[in-house]
Structures are given as C-alpha cells and as structure tokens.
Length: 384
Image (tube, rainbow, N blue to C red; front, side, top):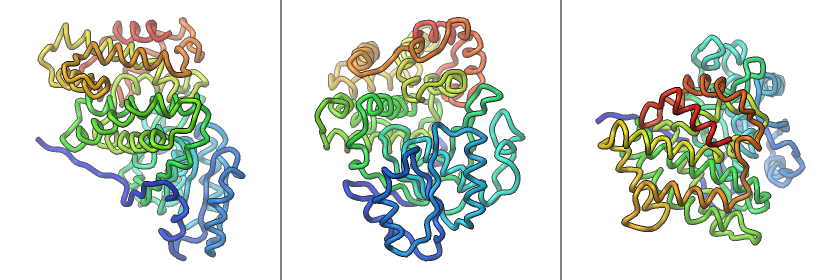
C-alpha cells in the first residue's frame, strides 16, 4: 500500500467563524484581493471586518462560472492591485476563480498555457499567493481542493488548472453563510457533496484516510440533505451539509472521483447548467451502470463490497446491499427540486459527442471499473 495525502493548511469550522478572519491575517497580507459572488453587497459585512481592521481591500465580483476570459481578467486586476493575499467568499465559482488568481499572480504567462488538455500543460512552478477560501454553499468542497475548474468556451469543455501549491492556506467554513440559500441551490450543491463523497469512497485511488473521511461525509449528507432543503431552516442539517462538503473536498483531492464527474466536466462545457445539477441527473444512471459492470465483469471487485457498505451508510440498514443504495438515491432525487439531463439542456443528438469527451476526462479515470463507450452512451440516454 502506498498513498499521499494533503489538505488546506488550516481549517476553521463553525457557526460565526467568518467573524474571526481578521485574526488569521497580518499586515503582510495587505493589500487583499477579495473575490465575491456576483452581488458583492451581500458580503459587505465580512469585507467591512477587513477594512475596519486596517486592511486595504480590492473587491472583484465573479459573474457566473469561471472561464478563461473571466479568470484572466481577475488575475490582471489582482496584479494591478499589487495583492499580497487573495480571499474568495462565495460559491464554487468564486472559490475556483480565487484559487486560479492566487496561482497565476505569481506565475508568468497566460492561463491557457497551464490548463489540462487544451493548453500547453505547463507546470505552475511558483507558490501561489496566500489564499483564503470562505464557501457560502455546501457542496463543492473547493475550499480544500488543489484545482480550479475553468470553462474553455471555444473548445466546448471545462478543464482543470491543477497544482499542489493551489491548496488554500485557510479554509473558513461558516454554516451561517448557507442559511439563506434557495432550496434548489441547496439541493444541487448538497447533491454534489454527497456524490463526491460516494465517488471518492468507491474510487480506484481511494486509501484508508480518504475512506474514513468520505464515509463520514456520506453519512452526514445522507442524514441532512432532505432537512437542509426543507421549507424551514434547520441549522443542524445545514451544519451537517457543510461538514459533508468539507469531507468531500478533502477526499476527492486525495482519491479522485468517478463516472458522474467524468461526465460533468465535459457536459458543463456543452450546456449552460449548474455543475451540481448535472451531477445529480447522472447519479442513478452511473451507479446502476457501475453495479451492472461489477456483476458482469468483476463480481469480486473491492469497490463492489464498498458499495454494499455505502448502502448501509445511506439507508441505516446494516443488511443493505448495493441495490438498496440505487433505490435510496433514486427516491432522494425525486424528493428534491432537481431536473433531468434533458431538462438541463442536453439534446439527444449530442449524446455521442458527450460520451466521447467524457471517456477522456480525468475523473473518469478514477471510476472503480472501466466503462465501455456503449455503457457511457447508455448512461446519458438514461439520464436524459
């Protein structure tokens, strides 16, 4: 057995934790380049804490999911500001943009030079600027991962900027920041966290450390996601879902993912839909296809037994088998405000293209068993 493991230098978790961020910084970090969601006024209280404590702050709102153009513009603004540290507060888009900006601010050349698959594949040789990630959704786990997912519209794909130096210096997770999320956003971001825990647990690159973290994240997500998406605020469920998201990010950064995310990256470049919503639409078809592949080609595969264990975690039934997990997740998806892949914008005529692109994705390589082109097409047809 051999494996490596890394995560953010510091993780600060708890209700009200965002109020402590000035104490984590010192004067050497000023000026601060602060990326926010599209409406920066929503974060005025947090930004005010920084200015009140003597930090010079430059604010940059992030409009939509990151693209080569939007990230390049943000990086140029950070360089012009002479930033000594970067903070991102918002959803996965703001955090991914922030990680990329912190990395590119200290490395020469253009963003496209460093991207997987579509660029030159250059290595980020210099350490990133100190970066603080403050998530306001419970789903991506981006606050503890070492990559940024960036859209390349001209190629019709989403790819990663990736480096071990991109791990945030500080991850500040405050469940209070998720209390007012709309139900549909809580649903698809929460499903992303659950799926990331499940895929990291089943991944061919899983290890004992990621197994424990992913399994606990799956347990927290399973017990909380329905309550977190309910009509009334359930603060315990919201906190659970934030912890599940954190677990998912730590696990995936060290164990890779699987077929759901293998599809989600390429599909994200083909249709205009939230990442978590795309993932949720693919979950049951992907899990069912993996289960059939295990049965037909590898009945003794170690991930097959782990899928039985995942069923126990999800259902609470110690006698549960893998098929129970499929049924439980299918019921969950029906209970939440989610959409099919067709409703999200994928047309039947695009299925073969999506399957071809997905087969080459990095996450697909983490799937516990190799899926054929026919199986990939079958999954997309079922998700449509």
